Image 1 (cartoon, one colour):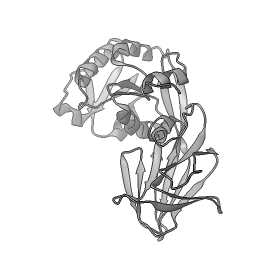
Image 2 (cartoon, helix red, strand yellow):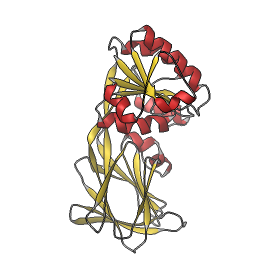
Image 3 (cartoon, helix red, strand yellow):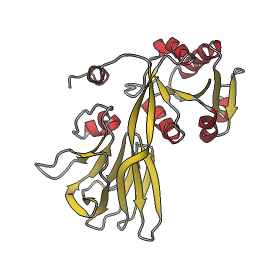
Length: 283
């Protein structure tokens, strides 16, 4: 079995945790692969180093990340495209998407005998359509946000489903979330906690100028299209990691991605109990 090990070495104790993980995996006869850029901070004789994420995930049977939720989310886009399952070891503050804490990494030996389960989670496809006919497409694990950008003022955005206009908002922005992302920015914006086993699209306005604007949930076969109504330029932010400047004539389509994220699970856990523990408050 081949494991891609992705480590955020900016996190305290991540190098020591990576050392322990490599020892556990190698003892079970598992081959470990890492990015060659890590060699400057972490050179290990039992690791094979490869040049790119594409190479790493092409040879791997599964991936293990060591870091925060951001490390998992960044790696998840590659894992989903290549249909490889992923597991996160939490070195961050909350680690909501992570499966294991550093004290639990001995459980990784179960990867060798297949003693684990897979939970599939939906992703969002996000397509930017330009007036000249060109387009770019992105994958969102958590969310995609369309906002006014540099100036702190409201924008006016129209949301269509097919050819029908269904909603119009004056707000700081619009946030489109997967169920996985419902406990991230969407929760801060007032959205509900959604079980990640569900498959739907959550739309939450960010600071709407309205007494009645609330989160709207759409079935996963809905294709939404967003455009500016007042000629504002804006920014699209995907998972808080990718930023795209939008011209006033651009349209953004939001839909269920053709890719699915496969998360490795090794523990029996209740989603709502976990949410309460991680977020330190009742839900």
